[in-house]
Image (cartoon, one colour):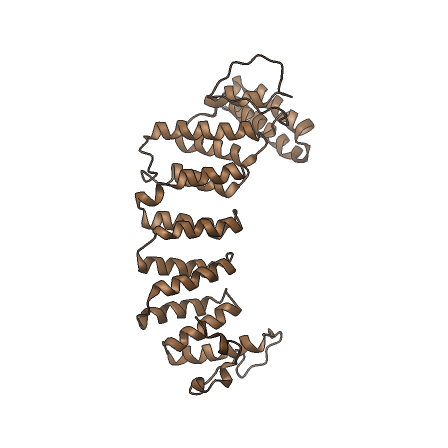
Length: 337
């Protein structure tokens, strides 16, 4: 950690740096459109180029690179040189990870800070606390791509059953907080279908598929027009090679114009109906059923066309030309077949 008493003193004014020859960015040239940096940043990066030229790796280099990183968290060269210095001088990496925690929270959308974390974790070989830290960062932004990508890297890189074990409850908690969190849906797919046997549930493949289909259909019932859940349903079926027609009984409940509040329905846990007050018909359900009918070939094409026309002319007119294309394409392919 840099000394606060010297943080704003230019390196050019520090006696302990007098042996370093600073190298300006624009040496012996006159750029047409020069970038105007702050005096602090220009000073620090000039001295950084100076130490890179000599190859120095020392404690004071850590101080210098921290100064640059705090001024510009995306300075990849400073990050990389900092890590190389840590390794060369055998600096303890635990304090560096603590420092990086603060820098990560300050700049969670910067690639470089997450890459530095990965290097440190790989060297430390202790990933267990990382998921808790990752969750803490997600509380500030539950859809930050970098945070989610890093979490998946931790799981896949270390590939330990104890790391995977809490992921389904974790992501379910986030989806209970925001059922439209597409990042959380993506992570659930990663955990359920892309991690091999490390999910920690002890289930077989068939049980896992049934679990996920029941889960996503319950969330669709809660918020029928949530595109994330419909994409998840399609992804689960595609990944497991199950025909869309296996879910027709469920999806048909969402193609109707409204929920009949007075209807005496037998509760079907496998096919939960839309919640009261749901906005119907659901566009994603109409498209899904059209795909079901199209898959039947000539026998189903007329029903598919009917649904696509309803989308083009009534329910989804903003994508009218797309639905008209689907109709032309499907009819042409059916005629050829």
